[in-house]
Every structure is written in C-alpha cells, then in structure tokens.
Amino acid sequence: MLPSASALASFRVRSYRFQWPADLATSWAFEMETLILGWYVLVETGSVFLLTVFASLQHIGTLIAPMFGVVGDRIGARNLLCAMRAIYSLLALTVMTLAFTEILTPVYVLVTAGIMGLVRPSDIGMRAALVGETMPPAQLMSAMGIQRTTMDSARIVGALSGAGLVAALGMGPAYVVVASFYAISVLLTLQTGGTERTRKPASGPNTAVRVSPWRELKEGLIYVRRTPQLLAVMCLAFVLNVTAFPQMNGLLPYVAKQIYQADQTWLGYMVAAGASGALIGSLVLSRYGAAIRAARTMVIFSALWFVMLLIFGNTHNPIYGILVFMAAGLMQSIGQIPMAAMILRTTEAQYRARVMGIRMLAIYGNLVGLLIAGPLIAHGGYGLMATLFCTFGLAFIVIITLRWRTHFWHTEALGNRR
Image (tube, rainbow, N blue to C red):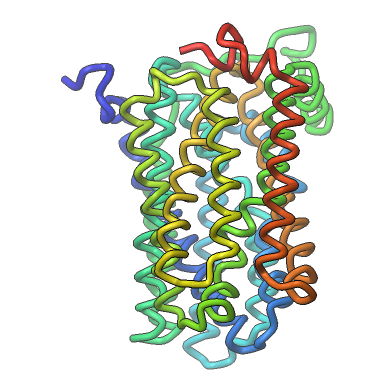
C-alpha cells in the first residue's frame, strides 16, 4: 500500500484513478485544438485581431460558469462533466467533417470556438469540485498537484503533436485524434464518482424544498463575499486572468510568427517549454505540497510569474525566450495549485461546486485582457503590452496582499495551515 505522504497516494481512491486519465485526455484535446485552430485563424486571415477574437471566444462561458456550479451541486460534478465532454466530442466531430469536406473557413472556426467557449471554461472548476468530493482533505494538495499534471503534460504533448499532425497529415486527420480524445474522456468520466466521501447536504429551513437555481447562485455569491479568504482569492484570480494568462496562452502564436519569425513547429516548442516548467512545479507540489503555506506560496509565486513574463515580453532571441518561458510556467504552476487547494480546503462541502464555478468566472478576465492586448500590440508592440500588463499585475498583487494580509500572509491564517 502507498504511504499517505506518497505523491501517488491519491490513486488509492478509485474515482481518482479514472478521473486523472479522463482529465488528461480532455486536456490533450484542448491543447491540440487551441493550437491547431489558433494557427489556422492567424494563417488564413493574417490578423492578430482575429487571433485575439478567437482566443477570447473560448472564454465567453465564464459569465455562466457560476450557473454550471449550481448544476454541479445539484446533479454532481461527475454527471455535469460527462455532459460537457459529450458536447466537446460533438463539436470536434463537426470541425473534422468540415475539414474533410474542405468547406472549413475561419468563420466556421470562430462559430465553433464560440459554442465551445460557453462550456469549456467550467471544465477546470468541475474537475476540482470532483476531486474535492472524493479526496480526503489531507491529500488535497497532493491530488491537485497530480491533477494539474494533466494540463501541463497536455501542453507539452498536445502542442507538439498538434503542430506535427497538421503539418504532416492536414486538418481533418488531426481532428480525428482530437475527437477520439474527447470520446475517451467521456467513457472514463462515467466511471468516476464520490465513493470515498459523502457530500454534505445543505442545512437550513429550505433543505426539504428545492429552491430556484438563481437563489442557489445568490447563496453561493453571498458565501464568497462573506468569506474573506475566498473573496481575496477571487480578486487575485481575476487580475491574473486579465494580465498573465493572455501572455501564456492566446498571444503565443503572435510571438512565434511576428516576434521570432518562426513557424508552427516553434510555436509548439514554446508551448511545450512553458508546460514543462509547469509540470516540474506540479510534480514538486504533488510530493511536498503538504509542507507549504498555501496562501503565502500563491502570492510569492504569482509575483515571480509576472517577473518572468516581463522578461519574456522583452526578449527577442527565441532560445532565450523559450528558457524564460519555461521559468514562467514553473512560477505559474507553483502559484496556481495552492490557490485551488486553498479554495477546496476552506469551502463548505455544500457550496464547493458553486464556489469553483464562481472561481471560473475570473477566467472572463482572459477575454478582457486579450481584447485590450490586441490594440496595445498594434500601436506599441508586444514589449510595451507585456510591460504594462506585468506592471499592473504586480501592483495589484501588492494591493490585494496588503488589503487581506491577515488571510494571505499571517502564518496562523486558515489558508496557510499545513
């Protein structure tokens, strides 16, 4: 039997043994799809504005992510994830068919991205909610570290294979692989479920009568507002999504093509480098995460993430840029995993899916950041945009930390308990 301190101890939970490969397949498909379609839009249109529109469309569903959380608390995170991943499969099959029949255009890609964007932002939150339902609290940090490897490894394998498949086989065959990964994820997710922990029912006078979804959503929002460490995390998450994540994801095709004068293969290398750094961070936290103070770690490494992105944004040598981007991925991972674990640890069971849904609402900041970044790049260049975004982000980390220092910095704070 695996010792409780082992990085692999989470796999003793049956649900987790199925959830991890299901999340892995979904993440691989996400990364391949984003890279394939982002490059397609940029090459076919030659417009950085349409590239940012494509990237932004993938996040429009963040506005309804809290309602996904309400549904998750009602029907269970597993059932909701199965339905969401079935939608991914259907959309991938649609793009595959359009590609094989040679009628695919950037318009169809943008429409598909918009539909996908209604559902996809909630996937990460519901994954975390399912981990919270099935995993003992003492193993949450380790479980989230290992769970994060599904996204990090996907950025490596998905990015390199996505670029290579399109270059070697074309859009249609590449999408056969994407659709297959989505189908596998649905089958595996069906095998997950809360057998280790029983979800705590909501208490109060309304437990016998199901209240309206809007009432449940309001209760979740009030719960976050009245819980200082959760409110602080939501503010920090929004700032990171406005300023940091666009540089890590949606704008990379522009950097590869316009700054480094490289092709989609180099784009794959860049994505893989950032993901490799993040994967290292995930593996470290999966083994030693129980020894860290989550809130402090989240603040420190979020700030270091901005420092690395600032250097990356002003580096014009692709080799140096890849090395710096790998360091940025490491900082991102060590900053983000404690954030998720802190939310799960400090949230009451009956609110967990709703709180994770509200947390996903912060991803809407990606859309805001991308739409701001496009005009900034067009008028002042990528370096100016990166400098402004990183300076803004660092300033707000300082403000948020000072405002909620008793919950983010004090060693006795709930978010810093080991």
